[in-house]
Length: 131
Image 1 (cartoon, rainbow, N blue to C red):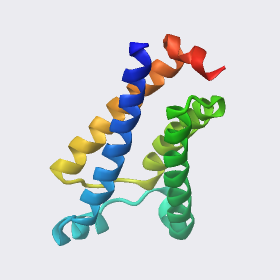
Image 2: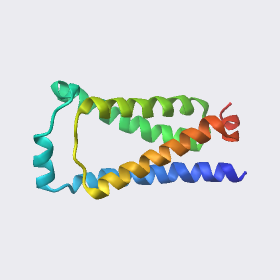
Image 3: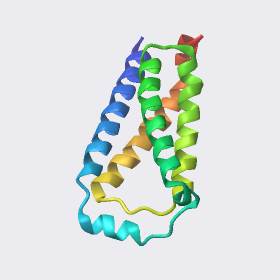
């Protein structure tokens, strides 16, 4: 089916955007890092180690989930929704952050692709492949 091809391509695009976000964040300027130090901290700032460990765990779970979705494994659908909601909550509780223009574009594209994947997962004939 054509929709399966679109779905799989969206998963590949999501993975590529994730890699680009990680790579681009390693090249942030020192000025940007200095600005981020002075911004208002969120609730998770008190638990910096916990927040970092949780983020790493969720990152690797996200990679696993993309693989599960690509292969149409049923529990990948629920895990993907859980990870998207968890990511939104962690971002909210981390406080303010300043991104570069490239980081902002990649983040917004990632959000759009994740939204498209969620719509296909729950509101298209793709949902039948996960039963």
